[in-house]
Image 1 (cartoon, helix red, strand yellow):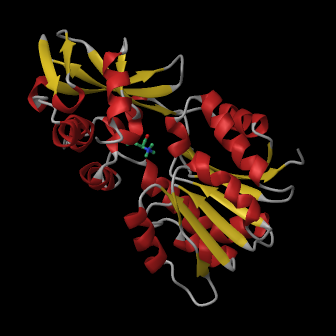
Image 2 (tube, rainbow, N blue to C red; image 1 turned 180 degrees about the vertical axis):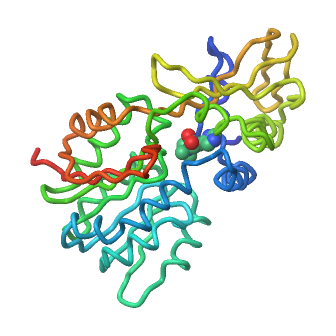
Length: 306
Ligand code: AVJ
């Protein structure tokens, strides 16, 4: 049986219903996310890329000498090229759950004098391996994926990274900043409906992989700004009372009309909140770059002695 079965059963029998956001990224979901990054409303990717491309020299200078660059969630590493050229490490270690994405990354980033050594797996399992790589090390965690984590979980993840690093090693973190609802909501509910398709693909995936019978038209994509928690919340909302059978789980799930299935949070902390997470994880900030509108922040931070 599919290894997503246990997570799906737990999430759909919980109250309120929720599924882990990593389930959004099957092959179709990853392609839809790529399409999201090109949308006019989705400012994150192009804003971060602008900062990295324009400030790569400064960032590399602030980081100092680096032997190894490792990257969490490297994917196809499309955004990493400029930084790698500026930092010029001897070794690049992209880390991702997707082996196919890492193959593309290795091909794209092949450069004379650079060894590319991909690691396939989950962050939690692979972070300890950073300790065995030649220092000084620079760990990249860009793309605002940190925003999918609860702040306490973000601290735990970065602290685990910190434990695998040595004093003097650095972290480069890209994170979306808090801004007006008028900008945030369209970024997660675009006019062309690509984000809605991305979210609904989760149900299509359950149909494909678990023999579920979700009617995709019976749910709508919902993107809500939560100002108290400083996050976008994404849901699928049931448009009617309905029962959905999930064959592989031998389970029937009941949805009331208006009931929500939570699929994602995307935190947009103000700068102070981002800095607090770095401090609590054992890093001291040494550099900060942002775009002219202050939509997005790129932090450079040094690992502190334990
Ligand atoms: C990949 C986590 C950065 O939160 O902006 C985009 C995921 N979800 N649109 C984000 C996402 C809907 C994205 N991250």
